[in-house]
Image 1: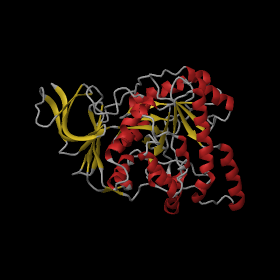
Image 2: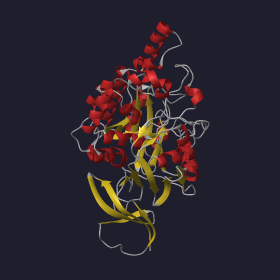
Image 3: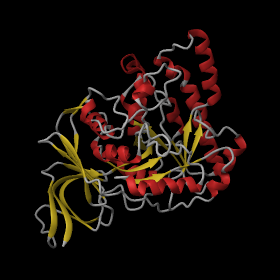
Image 4: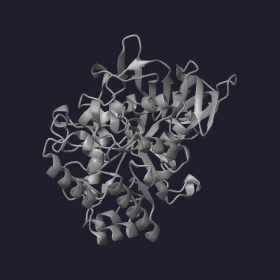
Length: 452
C-alpha cells in the first residue's frame, strides 16, 4: 500500500508543464503517473489537486532564523512554519546568531536544535572569521551547505577583512563559499560624510547612497578574483546592482559554473522610490537601489547571469525597525511571501513560470548539489507545493513571522500556497472555509545532505 497520491496535478518541472499524478511512498516520489494510467496498488491517502499547479518545494539558500540567542526576533520553529506556509520546504541558515556559528561544535548545536523544531528541511553555514581556518578545514562536504564570508558589514568577529585570511579560506575551504559583498571602507567613508552633512536624523532613502554601487562592485569583484585565482567554488549572495552583473557568465551551463550568483526577492520587487512609503521596513544590506538596478536584475535572471532567487529572510522586531536610521538594524521577514511575490511577477509577464521554478527550486539544488531534492523526479524526496490561483491580501492578522510585520503589508497577491508537503508529509494546508493556516506540527524536517 502506497502512502499518498496527489491526483489531477498540473506539474511544473524541468522546463515542462504537464498533467499527471504523483505517487508518494516512504517520504519519496515513487512514480509520476500519466492521466488515465492506473495506480499500481492501494493508497492510504489521496489529495486532489483539482488541476492546480504543483511545483517542487522551494529551496531558500539564505535565511536568518535568529536561533540561538536572538529569539526575541524569531525562532527556528516560528520561521520554519512561515516558510512552509510560503512553499519553502528547505532552507540554509546563516551564522550570525548568538553564539556565532564559527566552530564545528556551534554548527552541530544548531543542527540539534533544528532536528526538534523545524517543519522544513535544513542546513546551516559555518561562519568565517579572520582566524578560524582550522574550523573551516574540518567541514564535511556531505553534511554542510557551505561557509559564509561577510566581506562587508557584520557584527562581532564575523567581518573578514584580513587579506591573508581571505586568501587562506578561498584556497582551502572544502565546501562552497558564500559571500556577502560590500566594501567596508567605502561604507564607513560614506557614513561619515552623510553624518557630517545631515546629522543623526538621516532618512532611510540615504541607505543606497551609503551602501552604494561602488561598495558592492568593489567587494564582489574582489571575491570573484579570489575565486578565479584559487579555483574556489563561489556563490555571491544578494546581488543588488546592475553593474555587478558584468562579473558573471551567462553562457556556461549551471552544472559547470565555478562562480554563481543569487538575487533576492526584495531587490526584484522594491526600488529606492519605495523608501518614501516603506522607510526602514525595506532597509536591507545590501540596500534596495534604483529602478534601473531593479530592471537590470530582472534581466540578469532571464539572461542566466543570476542563478538563484532567495529571500535573505532576516526579521527584527517592529520596535527595532521603528528606531532612527542609524540605530535601525537592516533586514526584514520574507519566507512566507517570497513565492507569492514571484508568482505575481510571473503573472505580469516579467518571468516565465518554468524560469521561476528553475531559479527557486532546481538551481539551488544544482548549485549546492543537494541530494535528492529540488525536482519532481522518481526516487527524490516528496517536497511538493500546490498553488491556488486566488487573490488574497497580506494583513497583520495572517502573518506567521514571530516579529509580526511584513514589508508586503497591504499587498494583494493572486497566488496562494494551498498545500506544502515535506518528505511526503502534508505539513501545511490553507483552510479556505475557515480562513486558517493548518500545520502538521509533529512532523520535523530533515537535515540536508549534499553530493560532493
